[in-house]
Length: 266
Length: 53
Length: 232
Image (cartoon, rainbow over all chains, first blue to last red; front, side, top):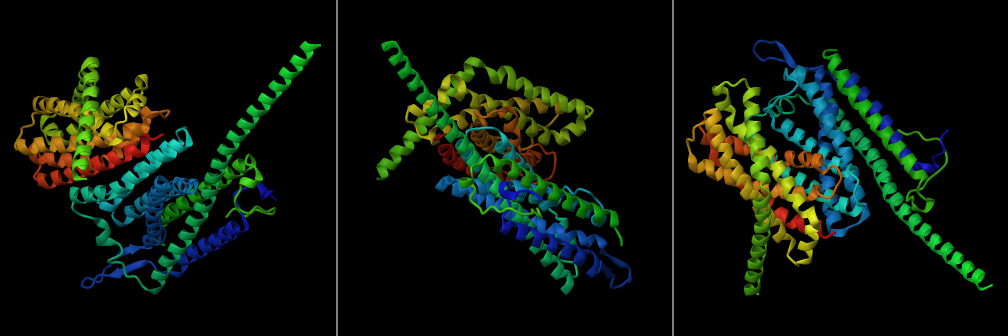
């Protein structure tokens, strides 16, 4: 038993967490047991080809990739909101979505690499546009988090971080375009979704993946937002305490002075 | 099942990272919540077992 | 209305000119660029030569990429220097009290960095011709690429230099913030130089277009963001 009066949990978040765990178990069941591996027969030679069981990695890789973009877009919108409205809410949302997004982005790169080894026969493919864009995105937001972790006056840091996030997101189309021209080919379109025979159950599992990782994302965002909110509240609380202390000091000084004066008078 | 090692690595790393990150966030929140007065916590707090999720 | 607009634009650029002149004058006195940044850039070129086993054909093939990586590394130093000028003797407070628009300060500082980068690029071009045996096939493309890329690097660098300044660990913060943003510039300028130096068969002019777009976006964005940032 843990006393949860001092935690970021609430009945709502615990229900969400429980649903997420059940969803994850269901997703694993569908991804590993109920769906078939991707095996296709060559029309002329009759040979077996395809991604075989490696396709089961896509049920987690693709939803996470989409959510990474959702997270970074949320961060950009919240950053713009902060610059326009200057509310704590915007700032905390931007920080939370950037941190959760960076974790997702890292996992997308790792799972993509693990999937690419058996399917593309390489851990890393320099010529792939989405791969390279995602990597640069990961580096951009690592820089954002580094800025966030540098101690600074809160408002100044919030403003600077918001600018960094906006520049990073605006840079994405340019990075994407430059990498696209740089090596004019992409493995993604050739070998994944376009050619994959997506049947009812496969499609359902992929959709379930979106829902379950959406829940994971929501749960993490909720708790991370509350942590950020507490950080703000704590900083404010400390300032208030310091001011109160100052006041108390001044009052005791006055009393001392008064006592001193009366003492001197006698 | 083909590619079992890759599958376990991919799913395993993902679940472990989410678990560790989630745990770190919750722990950070616990430590932080203690030092903030009750009125500043905007969500409803309750006593009871924490499932964490 | 229009006359006032023209007047404001003129004031913007006059002020920017003043800031740029001040920065360049400080540079002319302290000679940090010539005494430290330029030798550092040359040193990097030599280190690449050692690392790649001094095979001149290899060096000539990769000269465009090595050139631009060197420019980016040297630019980090130039930007850090430019940002530190503002903090010495509280110069930024003086600038703010002068009533200049934030955009003027930004454009002026970026222009000063731009001019320093152009000097560096000239020196480095001589460097790769002498050390790596590069030959200039298309001087017009070479010069335009150098200018467009320097605009992008100088404006982005000035914005991020200001972003990182006044924070602890700014020396380590600046590279990880700035370098990923400049990835398109590195790719574009390298490819364009591939064409201009005849190192690879690519269409350098298309890449020049991308660099120009980057430079334009970075200039406008930087001028706007600088205002939002220094109103501390």
